[in-house]
Length: 291
Image: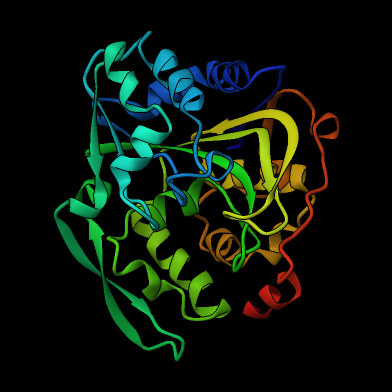
């Protein structure tokens, strides 16, 4: 069965996101069932808005959901640098409580379970992962951005969920060289893959991401209940070879979603009308050494 990926091109961020979600509304309803919704934004930086999930992205998701979901929604993040609630304040997330039924959770303060990954010698080690993100009764929505990365080429909806779910102090344990980090992201994806990928490409980040890159305007929104299919379309738009991205390659080989273009149904805009070549990170050639 083909996976449906919506692709919308619009003149503002909110419309890109909201319209991309509306195009897959039935898929979202069917996959949601009776689960509790967790929205997991990305605060790799709690100060640089370009590096973080924009609050307008989350507002578009909340407005989409309120048409058929009336329960409280948890907005959960575990910042890598700085205090998570500084990010909520700096990016105006706390204002959402005035209009929506939401609560905020710092995943760095959550209960945790120990999960096994590998080190640079491919030996087993354990890391602390937030229980909220591991709970299969929760429906994880990942609002991510089109961004380049300094070790795994691109960071999109999957990496946002995986790394943000690791408690601070243990996040660095997955960074054990190019081979280990790609394999670790894949191992953790088996437990932490998002139920809904929502990717903001209105203004992405190219060059030295995930924090210090340059803005690149693409004006697109991507959404799918198959995270791998969404990542494949994102890679196509950014001009990266999907097979060069180690953790996504491993996920594809493990059949964690559809990644072949002939198994993806794109609704909305055509890829050809959305392509915009991203400048890779300066360490791009080194990053390919995961192979």
